[in-house]
Image (cartoon, rainbow, N blue to C red; front, side):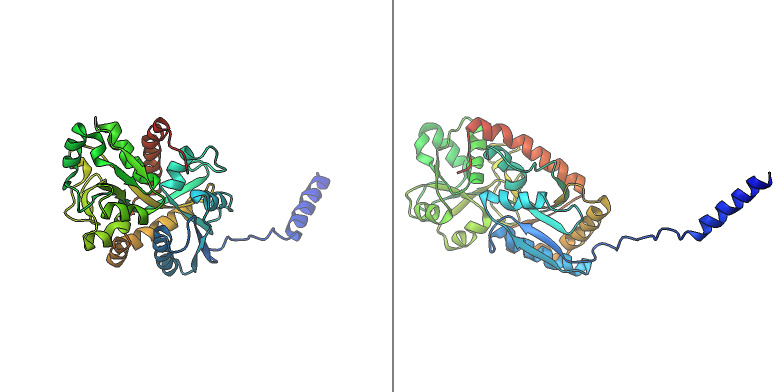
Length: 324
């Protein structure tokens, strides 16, 4: 009995003599600068908007937030880099409707999965496309176009300077009996020259790309592709109110983190972004850059992105659209 008591006492003394393992508390997030990868060139719309958001985010978080441009392969190179980054909250990416939706259907193989390899943070901004007419054409509304094409299919050829522009045309064709004929262009400049000169009656482009030309009278907006009228082009009726109820095509930017980023960090980023996007100066700034401010929870963004993928996959595959 004495031996057992001695053993217990000795074990207790030994335990007291061994120093406890040190406790390393994780530093509060963020404790160092954050980078946001933009998979497009500097000066492009997504880049400019991201730089403004990064500046405001840095002020709110008390750490520098820097933008790193990694363009190439339609946004795939930078997005792949972001997918491979450590999931610690210090590398983020400004995803778009191309990188996190369309590209998986346009490119034969991607080295990232836009849903499985990222944690959604928040939808930052959206913008519709604009259907615009040459001032030398007879079209004042999309209804005019639809009525004319039914009797003369080649009377309303449409300049398409982007994949998103083509998707607008393909969705109109899939939702109606009207068969518009799209003419591909490599960029907006050449398309604007031909439409402004009357060589083609119509084109589809972004509000930012057309705004100055609309003001100058080079082209005339006849419809926007948002579900409702857009603050970017007040007074221009949406397609959904011109014979195609429920029609919607929007481009978007959304902040993502690599898969596995701790939920607490995602919540912190979402909360800060919510404050930024609620500020009147941010809303005015984004509108001036051609974006309508977004918002919502990470779950909202995940649901939205899934619905976008489900919407566009059959249209892209059905039309046989490939990346150029």
